[in-house]
Image 1 (cartoon, rainbow, N blue to C red):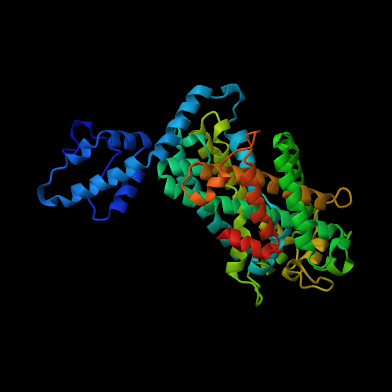
Image 2 (image 1 turned 90 degrees about the horizontal axis):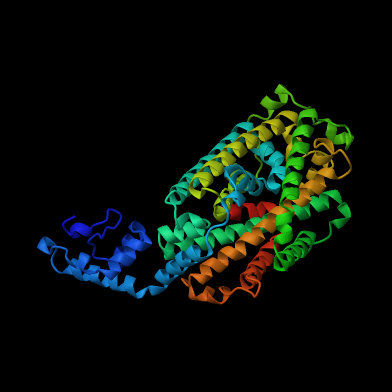
Length: 468
């Protein structure tokens, strides 16, 4: 503390180092924005470091680092503008804000429960077996748990940090450069999740209406869906917000259809050739599917990559920090509750799938099944509960498109935030907002990237990319 005098702050530390760039990172990472500004306004605090055995070199390095910080006035201006704007506009009425359940738990679950639950869980357990599938779920859950703990730690600092989404939190605590690096990867992940859900909707449509299968139908229909979703976002998000409750009900209804169907299967309404493989809940079937039954195209890694995107929606609560009554507390409680609840749900679904049908049927290697579309059609017809024709397919399509729509709402706003901070010159043209206050340019760029990724045309190829 003698290096800094009586004004020393525990959160501000300058380590002597022969790499000025590293000094800059240490300063940005260990100090809050207000402390950095204070240090730059009073450089004498740092220049008073005793020379002693350190010599003059550390002092010169520290001086260079401070000059670099002082020249980066843009970061300070952004923080000042945000603080001033928050004071002028004020906070929304606390009565209109949400708690941990409605503000974090529900939207996080909606974003985690995607198309893979409906179209790939049976395929995963058919190859990996029940034991390895439970290992996959547990491993993914641990990763999500660590990510949530880290996010909650950042959010718990309160104030300006917890007023925005994950990018906002990271860039305002760890520095703008690190924040931009993480933010771009997060934007790409959200965009790819939109692509995954869009392709899932196309595959569900192909299962329900076989006539929709034509050469390159996944790419063609996926491109049409993506364009329609982008136009919906461009037209305004008010209608999407109003339909949020409807979308949530559709997701819960579809999940109920699968649960009820698995418990009461078989229904004897599908192909008799396939019903011989569906035993209903049976301990004999459970132990028969306990071990793995991989083929030449599948292994533990492919099964893990196919499942892991089911835990990629855990940051949805942080994206809604501005509508929470107590962001640090509610983000932590709601997100932890969502991933724990989802973990239990995933485990129960895998156990049910492994207990009601032979692994050869779940893999799609029985007579009359040629690809994943045929397999999905037979599974839904014989196992999933359909109170009226195609009800499960309709639920899967709506649930998939709604999640894809939510991703296309979040991704452009995240990209516009990164561009607005002016960290990367190449993104600067995406910073301006439209006359309605919408990130139209960022939306157009996001749509172009998503439209190109849709051309991949296969869930099994997109999911591993998203898992990275």
